[in-house]
Amino acid sequence: MAEIKKVATRVGFGNALVELGAKRDDFIVLDADLAAATQTGMFKKAYPDRFYDCGIAEQNMIGIAAGIAATGKKVVCSSFAMFAAGRAFEQVRNSVGYPHLNVVIGATHAGISVGEDGATHQCCEDIALMRTIPGMTIINPADEVEARKAVEAALELDGPVYMRFGRLAVPVIFDDDYHFEVGKAVTLREGGDVTVIATGLMVNEALEACELLKAEGISARIINMHTIKPLDREAVLKAAKETGAIVTAEEHSVIGGLGAAVSECVCEEVPVPVLKLGVYDVFGHSGPAPKLLDEFGLRAANIAEKAKKAIALKK
Amino acid sequence: MDAATKKELEKIACKVRIGIIEGVHSAKSGHPGGSLSAAEILTYLYFRKMRIDPANPSDENRDRFVLSKGHAAPALYAVLAERGYFDPALLNTLRQPGSILQGHPDKKHIPGVDMSTGSLGQGISAAVGMALSAKHFGNDFKVYALLGDGEIEEGQVWEAAMFAGNKGLSNLTAFVDNNNLQIDGTIEEVNSAHPIDKKFEAFNWHTITIDGNDFDAIEAALQEAETVDKPVAIIAKTVKGKGVSYMENAVNWHGAAPNDELYEQAIQELNAALAALQ
Picture (cartoon, rainbow over the protein chains, first blue to last red):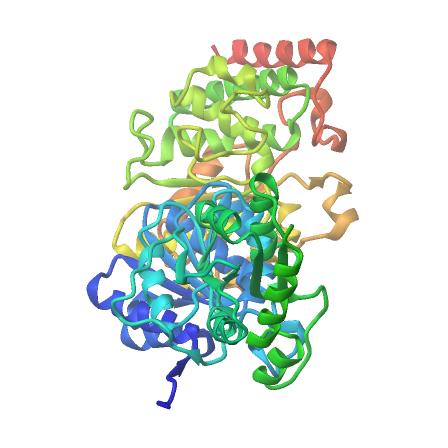
């Protein structure tokens, strides 16, 4: 078997900024002393005059981004998810969300796959926080290719965008001709018994789960929900109607994230069982990322188990 | 400035104060004290200083103003109305359902409002971002901001100050409305920000301390600001509640509306002051 190429989605973010920087000079990139980690450092190196380091002051960075956007200019700002969505939540809400400004927030090191840094840096609440802000678009790319395409699309959107990237190198699952559209879920495998709706690094786990289920004679539909807000309700409701059971998979708290968004949608219109796979209302801890994903049950086998439970709950 | 100009500005400030009292009284809530203290600063900026055109409020090259102490919205709205951005009759819809005049400034719906503010400490960062944008993209507009002296207890203000100082954003001028009162008492009683000038100087800003209710002093400070190659903080010593006798230096008028009787008294006092200037 050929070696699977693995790249972190944060690298896709950095690559996209450099690619876009070559095409256009109408946007500024901001970071808060994490450029080497968030990968905005690539842009800084290529276009030092278009990069501003705000220092370790995320609240001010978000405000500066809002001010730049308020003058009609484009801006991308970056930090770890914990600080961009967590620490600066109120700045994002009041200075960016309320005036509906075109600020792209590139939040990296999301989820427990941060690894060794431990719970203080493992943000499993960012999707929940950002979902509550009216007009916020939330994109959680599954691989490096999707990350690159999503950044380009985000820069063209009207209103604020929260982009969620990971630290851990994950399999590249899409080709360069992969079509990405904000708000449009991608059905990666057709299936009739159950649907797995996954986001971020769980998309690859979902694809593996599909194979595990197939071996047991179960036909699973796999949906990549890269855009969590606005949610592709049409894809969710179609899956509910056609497969009658749903499993959601995310590297995020089961409170307020993709699972919650899908549940809210399904129970309003086509109530079917929705089982959520995610982080179960606990803090993470230090350790190698792959071991943490095993320990927290964020693997293909866990998805397959959930899928069978969801099928058993069907009427 | 000549005496006639000064008198004209004083008349406008008087009308702005009337607009503040009208708005807050009709809303039965709002923040008159810190609105009244800032009437001269806002009047000078909008009538003498800023490169703006009320007929074209979203002109890309206009000077920007950010009311970082967003609760002084009644003052900003009264100035904008007086300057012709919208019908002054709207001031009586302040804080009412359906009105564009939200309790705190809303840039999406109010002509002339350059930034939505109200959560303290955030406006100054946006002003810094605007100044950075102008420098980066080669625009020559200037950015003005108004901070409260209680507001500067917010840590974000000093994050913004550090960045502006380090980047030498000389196109940014921030007033501190130093009326010395905040909700819970005098700023010394609550959590003194003094010495305010020394703090900004430590963050590489140029500072000027003035009587913030005096148009000559405001004009001189803004002229001095244009001669320095740093961001400028103008520490404006003001009287909270200025112009309404029972509100002056009274902490209880930070965030309360006058009843009908006190409203009449305030309007009478302000009308008398206006008449004296005619």
